[in-house]
Amino acid sequence: MMLLVSLECASAYAQNEVMESAVRLLGAASEEELDEGEYERFLALSRHPLKLNLCSRSRLLSSGVLSAFQVASLLDYRARYGDVLSVDELALVDGFSSVARWLEPFVDFQSNAPVGRARDSLKVSGDILLRTGMKNANASAAMKLGMDAGDLLTGAFSMKKGYTDPLWPPGSAGWALGYNGRRHLTKLVLGDFNARFGQGLVMWSGFSMSGFSSAAGFAKHPSGLSVSHSFTTPLRGAGMELSFGRFVASSMASMDGKAAGNLTCLGRHGQVGVTAAAAFKGKKRGAAMSVDTRFSYGMVDYFGEMAYGTGGAAALAGATLNPAYGCRISLLGRCYPAGFYAPAPAAARSSSKSSDEVGIALGSDWKSLACTIDYAYHPSSDASQFKTVLNYKLQATDMLACTLRSSFRVRPKDPSPYRTDLRLDVDAAYDAFSSRLRADALHCSGWSWLTYAELGYKERFLSYLRATLFQVDSWDDRIYVYERDMPGTFTSPAYYGRGFAMSLYSGYKMKKVVRHRFTTLGFYLRASAVLYHRTSLSGRADAAELKFQMVSSF
Image 1 (tube, rainbow, N blue to C red):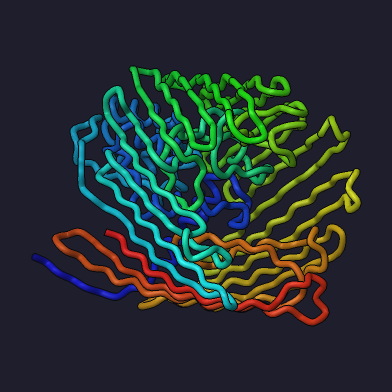
Image 2 (cartoon, rainbow, N blue to C red):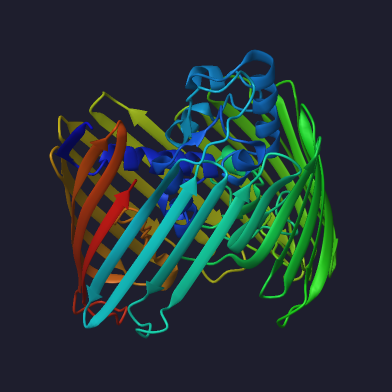
């Protein structure tokens, strides 16, 4: 037996890389636009990457990072030319040219199966997370367990007590079991799961970003049925997926009274699907049905969905042009009538919930530059909105980078019709040291501003110290800031009031190698405090928080 024990820092670089890739793949403008559940999904994939050459079709689809078209294209490539062995080769596969580099933290190019065939594996791997915290006089606790037996079986169990939740029962508890088959029964999910079909007009559970921050976020990538590893519970019930050649049939039912079915035909250059869903419980009951399509022709990807439900018919259609590597131009039009209802709608929209909105959006991504323009009109209220977003990252040197983010929004009928947000981030790194300076100015009902400075060190251990100053006198002018937090935790609070905040985040990770297999044990500590000035208009009280977490991967 070979045994090696060593100490190393928690992988801050890898965590930053995961965050940047998640932002890019989801089409967000910054970390503040992400959701805790989505971030947890990407973080879990970074710890247990998707084996592109060994996984079955259902496992590739349920990962949530690949569309059905991309999966079909990848499987066809594997059958014709053999396994994909690098990110550069992945970029040559249809549907991956613009996203290959951002998929790198979440995929593995291991190739030890016969060409074009996947190999069954029951190698067990998993993660254990234990967390406790204290905020003022209240306590919190969380526990999460996730396990995988190769790509065939997956399971998750979690419990979470918030600061204001009773000790028992805890604030939230969940569990999930999943099976990824290779024949006709390709997927079975029990417990907590996601169901995401089409472009989100009828059934798209969990988080869905509104607005248009980059061209990458115009089209959605449906993952069908997939096990949820988050503390949040999107759907709880059961679902099944059957595969017959090019056809994939899915059905699900949840304990909150939702049921849905989907039939999708996968082709070499695209897919066509039909989704039907109904809600039987709660205040809103009804049903909806849709037809969606997505296909690629040359350098252009086309996508769209048309649905009919309570309140009438809704539709969206768009196209994405990929003229060169790292370049993307997207156009999207949508029409959602007032009163349109579906059991779980989450289609691309501007300032509504997939109803009472007519709009058109145009976006362009060119390497480090992303720009979008969107116009939306709400017929029932005769209100409209125009919004433009610009993001530009300048890599001045290997050690210095500057990122400029700006947005401008106009709502003519609002009391404060204009909203302007300007933000500058300056990142510097030298050897084991890093720093970030952020300056943010926002004007809506009044002026607000926020600035922070962060210093970090990552060598034998990880440590980050951040100090923040802010002045936000109106809730309409609130500023969201992503806070560096425990692995598996996503924190993006809204700053409101006048005050000062400080946080310290530190961690150690122990790595153990037994028979060429890694197991890790990490310990993390975060202390933070927010102090409000006596002139603050927010009415918020000072707060102090201390959290401790242990994470083990095997």
